[in-house]
Length: 245
Image: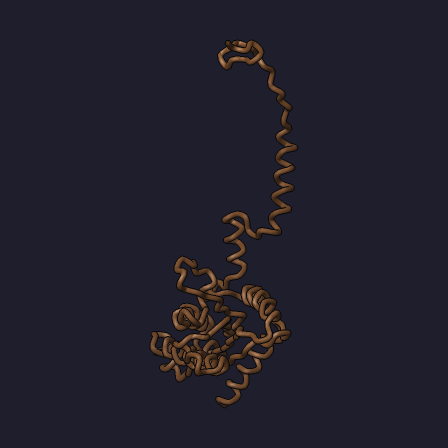
């Protein structure tokens, strides 16, 4: 027997819904407020913002990271290294020998082509374990653990090397300093060869100009900070440059 107090879904009994009018302007305001509060915590939230941030951290000429990217990355990494007793973070810096003479003789457009070539060849020179790549490289290959190669300004380039503990960089038998020196030698040799074997190199030789790199490397010491690290690697680079004269 059906209980008459229980309504059947097929009955014609009308039930009034409790509907509260919605103010669309008020609701949109609540959404925008929530969006603004979360934005600072989660970073870029749209494709446009992501691309915009990427452009701000990319050197337009070489397609590598710029000074903003360099400082931002080093700030994050040094904060981590400061919690350790022994740091594995290294920094390599190089500038181009005789670059002013190249610009003065062949013009700044030619000089820009040299910088563009360096920007293209640097990531190719640095292998997987050297952890450097284009600032805008897509990380689709999980085996490619990369960090940043950057152009700070002019003809100054930097490579962040979080760890070089790998047999292709000398293996465990070499100290970190020795592995970084080996990397510096490879960067100098291969980039110099890339430029001098190109059409740019042919024009340099015809005009009696030379090309080379002065490379400095250093290992981060906890507590040194970003400014201290940049100053230290700059000093090491100029020691190399001075030794060539």
